[in-house]
Image (cartoon, rainbow, N blue to C red):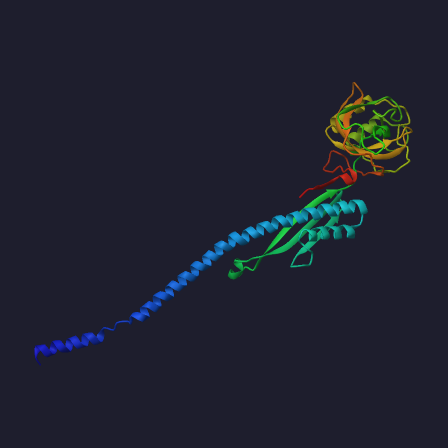
Length: 326
């Protein structure tokens, strides 16, 4: 065989051994890789956008939901304070929550209400609802559960120290019940069983018999506690025309700076109702209690419960006391 023929055979074999992929197949593989990267990129964009948009929506819902829980807790506490009916107070809380966009039993929403009396009137409201996601739904997160909690306190005066063992004259109020003294005023003691003028006070132990200085001092400091409900027509003045100079110092030590409910009596020492009084200070030498009235005269009973002022025990001022604590 000639050298020329051998070279031709080698060339033929070489051309048969090399197989070139069609250009179309290469293009298909490239397109497939680009498509995967593109899809992953789209999912990443959706995830970022979803966190921003759905996260912002969830935050806004949580804010609205917290407002609904707060208002529901306040409404229930106020309702229970006035009506003393648990079912009615629970219904009020749920109605207020519904009015603010969160209805119990609708759209996976639960509004749970609990009421206790171990420390005044305690109302706890838990609102659980779901936030419907828009973008993140495509990633398998259709919704998020959002929980908000609110707690409120309300009640009547529940300490003897909180109620203040001195009485004021109904003459300190106008005929419509508004107080005449709404700025710091000196109210003095004229050593009478009952207030002898509209700027006079007298001491009381919320019971009968002579009013003893030490007994009242123990009430002021919280060492002694009492249970009493004062109703219209009861005599609550002194029985001994006692002069209690030491008690002014006790008032200045224990009560100054506080708002307290105080009994209001007529010229005969007969209980008429109560009002809220802010004690600024008290002077032993002048025998005066300085302060001013913060509420109108209320012609209602005054309930005092056994609890001293120096422990963690709230002092409530009838229906005027209503606050969120959580």
